[in-house]
Length: 241
View (tube, rainbow, N blue to C red):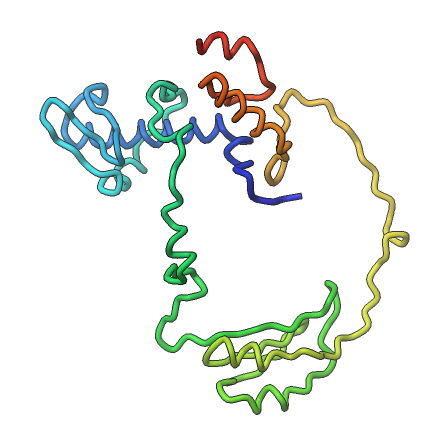
């Protein structure tokens, strides 16, 4: 299963994401130091800029991205200390919510380049079937519909806007009766477990029990200490004390 939600990607890839961020930060600092002809150790990254405190010089990440992309990728980078976290572990407002609620947010589907048309598809209910016959008379009669495109396994209605494309969508199509395999007709699948020294991994996001964040939040509320790794280890709480 592959899904998104509950910040599972962050929980499941906490360490790799931290390393990726630290690597990018190091390369940006190196790019700025090279441009200023300075030792990278005299520069720091803060609030999307690389800063040289001694001279007050600063460059934004966007200005440095091109140069940073050509810097050697470091193999070992220093991760930011937990005491230096500014955002992690703090409540943050969703800056995108007002626009999404009031309808002013612009999504990819809202893009309207000059001359662009909208299309809808009618497809067979299962993979492997093909279009046999299409009656597009009703669709062509709708104002705004420009073209009916017949593909091997679908029928597309191209129109000036979404309403015409949806109203002209082929609701009933005659797809051929290509017989797909049922579960009891599929060939046997053999599974082998192979020993490996690699760390467990896989596709998609790892499932996280909903009780885990609830327990972590309860511990934070009671002690003021954050747990950022599983399983819950009491010795970590003592070390934070």
